[in-house]
Length: 283
DNA sequence: ACCAGCTCCTGCTTGC
DNA sequence: TGCAAGCAGGAGCTGG
Image (cartoon, rainbow, N blue to C red; front, top):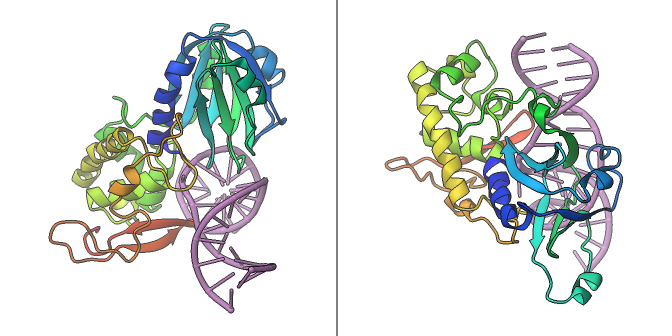
């Protein structure tokens, strides 16, 4: 699914289509995604102007001028697709509906933003903007890895005493927000840390080194527009291209890219999820 | 409290 | 070629 860099890329792509514009019509084609939509969602969106587009972890936060914010999670396979205003209203009327287009935002000026999600692990909810951080989906999430609250001391404290593999610890959204399977694998490779190592047993200097590595990995991915494997696309439909910069993810059997390392990338399973790493240089 | 495993859903890939 | 199993980027919940 989209991890932090993908959601951030989508957020940036949605801004020109949504910021400052009213939602003329919210077309809701089914009652739920992972959970039921909030009551009267269409009415609460229609006529509202979008004032701000934010992101918290992997959640897209669409703030409305009525004091509510639409929280959107893309799940594993969710997309937000922007279609510019058609030149003739005729085209809008006959625009084909793709399979799994669950919600369509018809924007002021004729543009459309379509939420498509085949697997329906995604979610939407509306919450009061002034208490957004108290929303049950957001309340327990840890610091943003690109923000000031995520630092060396925080990570050392979060890892202390934990016997779970560092791979699992970094996937834990309470420790740090927004990392998923791809970027955890890539960050651990860059840091030279074995994904199997118990989080609480990594020497402090190595934990410290992990902080800038996580930041750099995410920033590189955002710059590349995210990683497009199967489902993910940017808001304009373009593919991300960070997948071409993977060192370990989905590279089982390929040679390690680290200078001077002659190892081979391996795939293991941790907590039921694939982990890719180089057993030779990640210790 | 911590941690591993299960679960939701569809679609693509792989293996027989 | 056809079919079924396995797998996928998330994350809340359950039970040990």
